[in-house]
Image 1 (tube, rainbow, N blue to C red):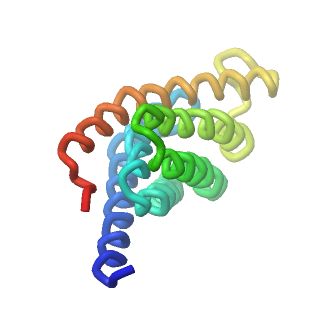
Image 2: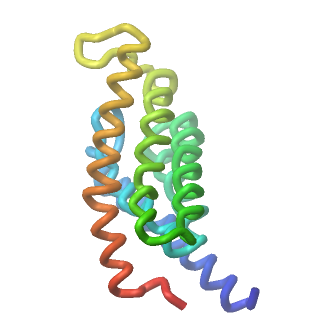
Length: 171
């Protein structure tokens, strides 16, 4: 790999991390807790365009979660983002008809991991009037999944088509 290509990749990753972090912090009211639409999750489609997005999204999520939450959120929320970004990157070489699955990975991993962070990391043990552990975790999972669908499909897929049209990431 040429030195120039490595520098470009490092720069792309750093820019993606910064954009993810800034979007999360600017829209912090919508970015955390039980009912959330994390606008920055629209960037989950970027691994379809560049491998630099995988570490970029992970680092951006980690930094934003450290500034907004606690260590558990930073570690496990970033892990969910890393898994989703890795799956999206694996879909990169598939036919474009499979690219719609990239945001689904983000929805699924976050719906499985974030409720555990909310329950055990933040101590959010109720959902409305409900207090049963499994019921609360289930309701939180549904709530997080709905927010992820809004962010990843409602915002992320239009971004995907815009980036495809502009060919911003083509070398």
